[in-house]
Image (cartoon, rainbow, N blue to C red; front, side, top):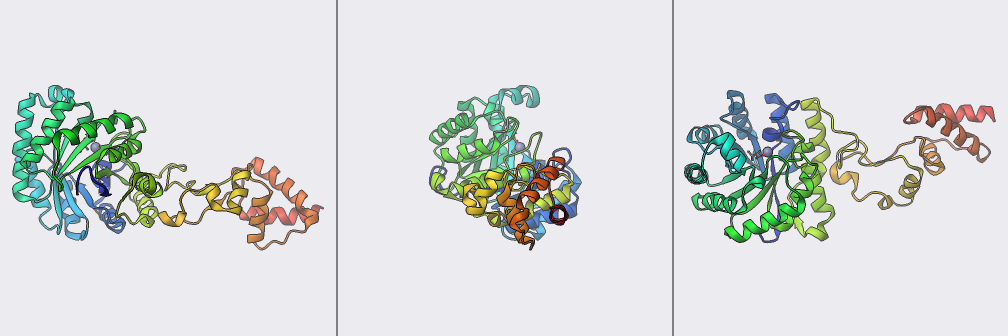
Length: 390
Ligand code: KIV
Ligand code: ZN
């Protein structure tokens, strides 16, 4: 697969590594295994199961996931050091398909304040680390941490070094969610031209959401030639999170004629994966979250409900069943109109006498003003009450 060609965009899931390492989202071994199953059902290309050298617990979960997953590649993160890579080798030993993901910071801030290394020393470490990993894995990914705040020429040197040492995926993380769609597009165009990766090497994006741009940046990266997107379920991840998998995948699918690219994700598994993650972590997604939020296929405004009753495409660009969500709902509230109210009453089996419609609608509006949502039970009470009053 070429980094600049068309075809399939790989989905690299890091819910269990970048997602799990953020406050509020830690998972038990049982929870991780449940999520690994949900990710396999989604048919992601790569599951980053953890960071084997980070702790004995992380080591055990990478190993347990490697034992049960059959299909997606199982991956462990590692710094470009021998001891980290050795932990990844051992933890991933049971995996049927595996990947080592090695990284080091490349930006001036990371070089000076975190690593205290000069550019040449960073390149040496990349060379040594990637070459060492490539002795044990036929699939090695290299990441230049804080790539989007790294000088472009040095970033290209780092990528070229990793490529020459055996990396098959060149990941360019926007570690602090700093970039914009236009800028990341230009960065990838520059890197692809400068590095000229062979057909079997892909460039990859890993966008954080500090400015709320992670999904837009990932899509811009794909337009520039990237063929792997790193992302998480529900967009969890460090600080404001990572690019949300359900959003990038559904954007590529819904706008297929614009992007011209496919993923191999079984999108009808998104709802289950999202709800499983809520249950495993105890953190609910916001109600209006794209694709998997409880409002993603709910309509309250009268004009929208009227449109939906005629043809759902008036106000929906995706079908709920395409992401495994329950069918669209017309929520009855103070913004709803007669069409939705009487359609719902008919669904509930109430034949409303035309003489009572005005009274019932007036009583409904009064009740809706007092409540957020008018339930089916409220409607039953309201219909009998209004008929008795008239
Ligand atoms: O955000 C980041 O830079 C990372 C890397 C370790 C890939 O998560
Ligand atoms: Zn990250």
